[in-house]
Image 1: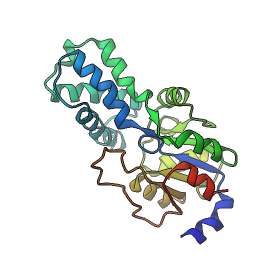
Image 2: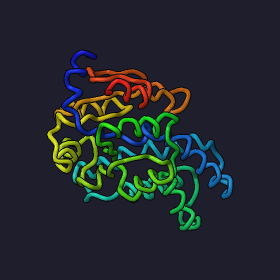
Image 3: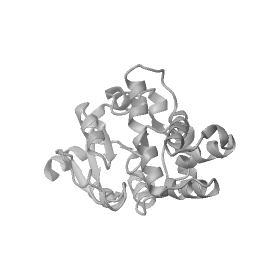
Length: 244
């Protein structure tokens, strides 16, 4: 695997990153802000469970767009809708809660902390490659996240740019086209095997980054690579060393 990837590496010109879980720690940030909200409104429950429940609604909501059941909408819209659904499931009536507070909590996804290696690793990788998110997040979300966390992106790419949610093939292919690159000149960097499988299927190079606590201390998925990815690393700094 390493011999193969080292031969392919000189052709790679852009590194495209999954964001939630790969670049930023969504669970800790969402639990932190949800905890304050739940306490303020007397809603019982563990903030971590609230964060998990919100995230569990993520893929099913996007699948409605992928399946053509609704037109493309930004992830901010999906997060806001899912928040109301989750609060209802937790026994709260969203209509009785201040709309401004709900809007602000929905924007908690804009305010997530980077993993400790993310900023330094991206900075090093940017010296040689174009670095950009290839995320299901929308432009405003990703730009706000980058500003707060200090993520040194060259540009903001992803679902809203190409009007498609991963793992649809055109989410990857159209992103490469936006950069004026063939798929083989792009490397998908992700902590999720399914994301890498979809990217690889359309010709992207791949790098798996271990994030063993993305889903908390009991995580049981994506602990190890499940495909023949070009690189397998523990963090972005290690990836930068591999791609020197």
